[in-house]
Image 1 (tube, rainbow, N blue to C red):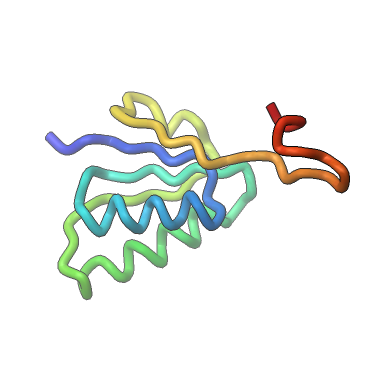
Image 2 (image 1 turned 120 degrees about the horizontal axis):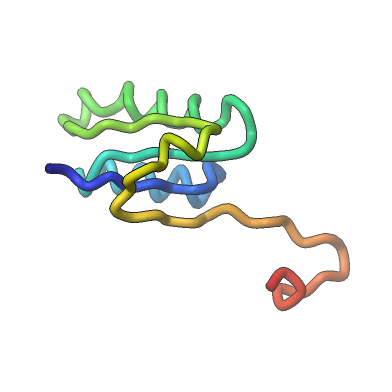
Length: 92
């Protein structure tokens, strides 16, 4: 049985992680983000490229945390952008 891998955050880092995971066929991917439409669109882009690259994975984009149930691996790429004058330590 294939691993279920959830990526929280569908920005540049999350989408790149999803691309690598799908490219290596490490597992089925759930791409989660709070912004409506972003994870769905990025997942669709990857899904449509899979036949060209001869990949056999499942990828879904969602805004619903329920889709992440029973994940074997969770990768957290989401974050808050820094405001002017903030250091990286301020985000912790």
